Image (cartoon, rainbow, N blue to C red; front, side, top):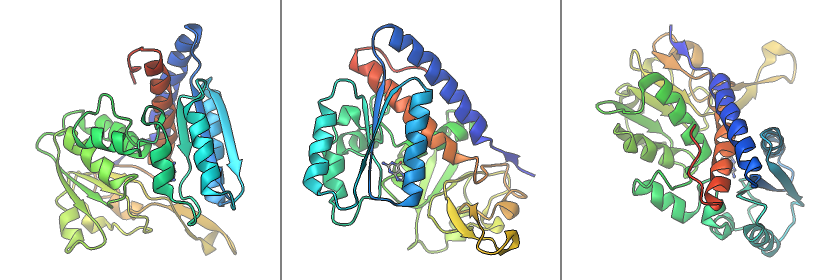
Length: 298
Ligand code: GUN
């Protein structure tokens, strides 16, 4: 049976370090500030945003949340981001995605000042990651969190290991592949148009599933001993729990995969808590950098 990678525990360790270093930074006169912006009433996004704002407060940050009506204009959102860009009390700006279809999400993301882009979605940060400038890039929170979990199992240097990332999104798949490459893994990106997906997955010493399809990765897709990182969060009907009930599952069929894998993240309690922890870490780093201090150790 696989080792279950406890994302809650690792995230709590990161948060402890963030809190300690925030206290130090505050005593030198700088309080990290995070602004979270949400447009509309998507219930899942509301939950994510509320937990980001709450954790920011717990870390001792200045935490502000802007909740805008679903019919907010693109111009108004651009104006808000520009105002946050020039607010010295704000070091991190996060605009929760997805945005309503009418709004050009790309334009909004590129309006965020790269040095406050704690999501790591701005072209400057994407380009830095792609060229290996990982010391100064803001890297998206979910893949960074996945890397910390992988590091716990495999160490920092992944030389000689095959990594397969299933999913090619800008938020997870692509930055994940770049981080694995920066750690010397041999990386394959697979996706919905890939032929022989199971066969490719079976070649992975490190398998990252980020497709958003409930339990798509079956046990026989997993190489014996592999490290399996499940980024998926899918809500599916759970009639066994009662009428109308649901439960969360990942992109990996956990009970099958845990019999084969060497280590595996559960859903919930795996990657999820890491995402928020890394957002706090990125915000702390942005605040430290804004006053010429070096990046905090994590
Ligand atoms: N929506 C889902 N994941 C994310 C994320 O990491 N950042 C933002 N801004 N929106 C998201």
